Image (cartoon, rainbow, N blue to C red; front, side, top):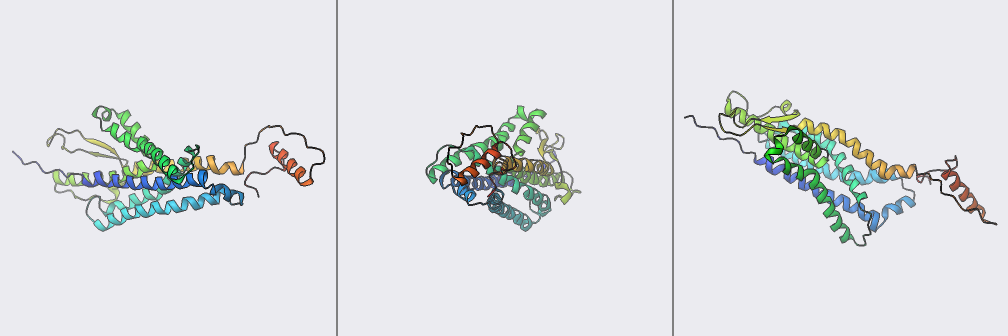
Length: 308
């Protein structure tokens, strides 16, 4: 009979996304641990607020540092793609991955910063903060990234179209899951082109730039059952990862602004009664009391905590 061609084995799609996810994991541990230490141990962020530093300016500085670190590590992946040329996923994948990195970087920084507010317990040492943060961050990222992939590997779950897309979209909601899935999709697009070239020598074995801009990647490893008994696989495409990252970026930014920044400019006004002023109260104390009462009552004399 006819000799069956050797199918390309996806070494890159197995190794590279996992390596990148570990890089993001260590970046997340560093970012969250530093934020927790500032808030619960050194209290440097409180001291900066007392000195009049704008909360927005503080977060711009914090997020810029970690954003540059994330872009730096992702740029290494882009350099490798350009250097490898025709090797999978080929240099044609650079534009789509660059777009994903451009969006996933800020989304990842805001997402990591939100972990800071999961910790309200008393932490006395820096080592204690590192241990606690490391445990929580690892567990949460596993829930969002690793567990959906493990569940999807179960054949009965993967056969369900609803379960497949629910778990896939859930994992893509986080920047870590989105960028690793995008890198995996780039390898799958290249692998699909290699497989189609084996089955039809007239087709090119390297994908074009436009081939990477796809919402889904469906690969038929068996050419309709003539080569083996495996069913075609359906995977999220690079364009779907980019779209979800673009949608989730405003969400993570809004949550960070809502939780930590907005409260400094728009404090919660309550109806807590204030005791009457004692007789002979100092003039400065009386002026501050009047200002506080006006702020509590929503009067014009009250300002937010961001005011000097």
